[in-house]
Length: 158
Image (tube, rainbow, N blue to C red; front, side, top):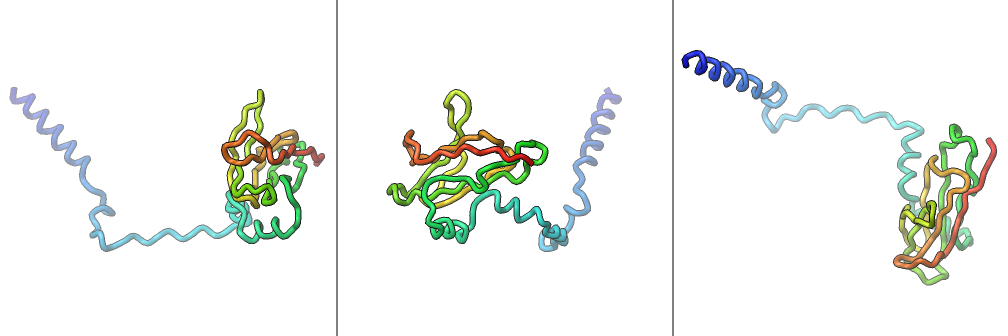
């Protein structure tokens, strides 16, 4: 019985030692550890930021261009999957249709669609290196199955 009590006491002490706070946690809450230095900006960082949305200036330039409809810029992507990194940018101007918002879908096999993005009547969306020749996108009004535009990505030899 004494042996069992001794083992329980020893296990309790061992577990209590494991719960001891680290020296960093023992510092008062008012003292903060110095923040790590920010990573230096690289040429790749702006490209990653751009991959999410176009800037207001870029959207304004689409409206000012006079182009209407739905298109990709560039319209063709590299046919070599190892060299295909940049992707393309989907752009649209369907203000004349009266739609205030639109949804861009990726057409998949057997007629299935997958939402890529949504936006205003004038806008755009950069899409990455996953886009390959033959990839098809459609532009629709929300809650509508009628296409406002369709883009099939072309093939560029590189």
